[in-house]
Image (cartoon, rainbow, N blue to C red):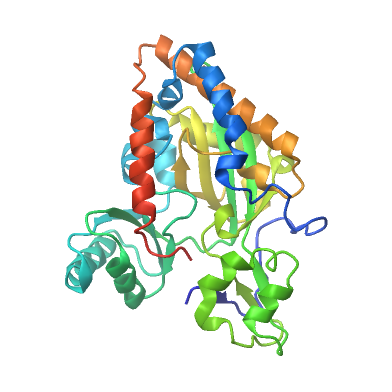
Length: 376
């Protein structure tokens, strides 16, 4: 099942602030082609490389991450260096590498996966995601052995994946953290609230009709319809919510809202403690699930799902009320701080890698993207 029908008695967006759907469903630039939106960012990078005398400085932002976590980084390598509070707060996971292609190899890998899950006390449902990947590519919920078998069969041979405990909290956020080397304390630069999109059954309309009629989903039907082809003619019972996206990624159709107003000193203290327990980590985004906004504001009740390094983005810019000027102002400041961190780390004795390593990592990452299973 690529979508999820939810009990009519269960509210959606549990633990989150009320979702404001006033105003336009999407911003005019929200789904521009990447090459167009990021063209000014590329120009700024050239300027920063000249100003700081080093095109590879951004790759020094987090010396313990592969290339600072800029592109093509391994989730497993990052998980392996976690310690203290960061390790305690991260959802349990196991690694798995696909051995040989096809159903025969998948059967062998299935047994390996089930043994690893059992040994680590992880039960289905779980989340399966590629070790190397971003923007929700290849992420799927695994609710049965059959789901896992299908995922393994469609996963490229030789590539690795993460099988992670599924945190059932509906509430999800991206918390972007920054600490300058030499400074005693960091801060939350951005917080994005992630709302999973739903349509509500009326007992008459098909799923396709509900998607097309929805103010926001209708605009993004090119994202949602291919994902639910086997359910499009289903008539949902009246009042039954149907979740359109599982992966908490904007490019996969999840709704992003600016959560800056909810940041508290207690939250900053909690994430500062988490970040400082990661060796040589200074900038990046924590993708989290949490119980309730009240608990999160107290710095409690959250679980880390992923840690993105220098290539992470302050994703609140994809709130449909963010202006283009505000979005670029945020990204320009983020990149300025990124180079400042790299500059300080170079002064501390770290040697920047060649910028061509970033190109190679990006190319390898893109090659894998085309071979991963469909995102759900």
